[in-house]
Length: 552
Ligand code: TNX
Image (cartoon, rainbow, N blue to C red; front, side, top):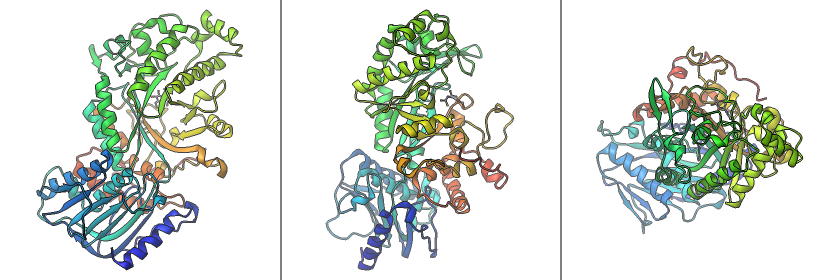
């Protein structure tokens, strides 16, 4: 790096580490080309010249971690496919200055970039990415992918023009550490290869949490060795007179976890309780109060029958299931659902009423809180932290539970006031099962959620005080799949994920939706090249969106 660039990089870095509120807008002084990156990097500055890939391009990566290696492999695969020349990966740092190289370095970087930050410097000599941690190198690689022309994303070579990138410097790091997408694999089973593809898309937009909704009323999807009927019976339902469903073996789950790990994505499994549990109850009817559910439901909605909170055998079941889940999933977090649990049965069940009495509880809401708190202790024994949907607030919240806010503003506020940590997923801004534009095939109760509304979201919701901001871990976009079987998932996810990723990654402050749209247009070309079937409505109906609702 020349001295001028070094000085510039150092001063950019100094700007990058000052607090977000003080940061000036990203500088994009156009030279002869321009690039479009989503999510928007913290700082991007063009310099002189351009880097042109030549046939003997090499990638250097010394760091042996799976994430750093995956970053190198990703670039090698893409550039090799597009240019038709195999790009070699050297597992070392070059001894002296090299030409025509991409270097991915974890040495001599600024620790202020944090666990996921990185810098990229493109000159006519090549590309140098630096990051304190391997995750930063992966995000540098994902950014570099977007610096190249869209042809990079084609599966095979089509053109003969050389690949090039304008000379520039990027300094980047995320605003939030929790950047998630949930995929409901219960309402519709998603094949393992599709999950890999979904993870690739998440990583492309620098998302780092895959919340895997594995159980619900309409199907139990994870093999549990102690309870084989959960998947022999509970993973299947009748649809159009046919047996329909599927499940993941524990080996499948391990493959998904390993694949995600290379992409710096944590996998948070969700095992629903005490509601949304009909598939488990149909497999083992003793789990309910009245043993009256014997079939896996094939209709949507909120089921009245939930797990019994009076029987010890139910807690024994959950303990055994969670022991296998905790052993399988290495991440610190497990999601236990906790949403939409109608209390009708509990009101009538002698065992539940007995529990209310013996534990000195006021009502069924406190019984739910008793249930959830007991489960949290089970998870803690396995070293896991518990996440639940915002209804876990009802009847009393434990101080250590993490609340996923989706629908109840008062529970979000209450949780923050209590000092609980929160993940934001409000239906108004983050529900990717809702339609982007009016769609007669979707139920009327679903709001319309256009890209512009997603873009207007801020996880630091109005009213959160500066001293409470650290409690907001970030956000997640839930993709429920009652109306989105596998072939429809890309359509629900994109382009809204582009906006959501920018909400979670990019700097705080006034947003420029028009600038985002310009970058989105460039991004559509990449998605086209990847063959992704995103929803075309935004592109075709731009400007006709409904205005965004108030944050609360
Ligand atoms: C509510 S969000 C649910 C899901 C449905 C979804 C449909 C939440 C915690 N529960 O069971 O699939 O609405 O939008």
